Image 1: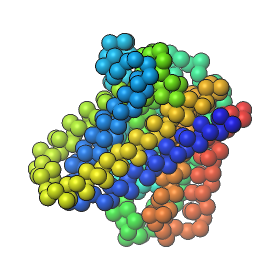
Image 2: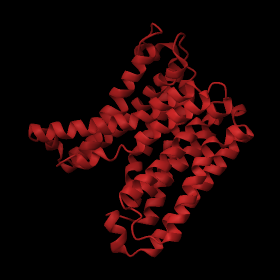
Image 3: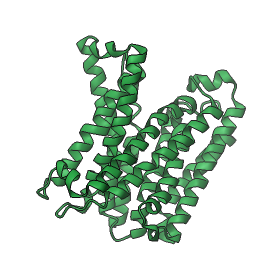
Image 4: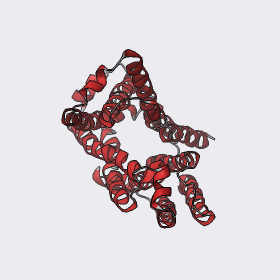
Length: 337
């Protein structure tokens, strides 16, 4: 029962993450770099910091102790966060060229597989790569490949006008390259979490244990994103975005906060969910892959609601649904092996 509850919490976090781009549509009169920087302040800096403070509340420590307990592990965790930040930047481009459904599917699918496999390798814990974990990753990749095939069928079948009706800048070949790059770099998030697990604090609840490491990873990612966005603000002369009338500014900050909260919910949920999976080492190792796979499932459901698959044949939609079902199965398959 505890395992089922843990998986449910992770699923709720995945649903929140897949919904985080909906509030962005409510942002008015801002360039991409302005709203991305603003939501990054909440998603990558303030909310993860609050999560770390919550984790330390019962242990007698504070976030500053992260930099003194194990400095080497701390800075390596931040370093992987910086690399993950590159994946976050290209993640937005993948959805620009492929749409929410297909863009998140390819990027997060690649991230799920590589993040799960590379984290134990890079941190010297290859014993975690058991047969059930590897099989789960393979099944996840099969599901992602099938969804990618559905996207390819969509690209071939629809006219340019029909593609751009749902995704303005649709470009399948360019989008696939960007999405795979995004997934590869985004895999550094889980590597960072594994690296941060070496920073031990007594008294922290198992359900909150990964929140301090999450803060360090997102701190590195924030640095990457903030530098790039400020560069774009300067290049495009869009600093004036932050000086618009107060009602519009309040509206934009509010929806960026909501987007950031929804995004961060996935890793808050991951931490809580892992607290209920302690009886299953396999699922603990596989939990990151579960989160990313469910992100793909829910993002495709949003893609259907946003009419990104409008005009596709029944065959294409059937292939898409098969891919989604396989991803759902992959989420609990390792526990059955």
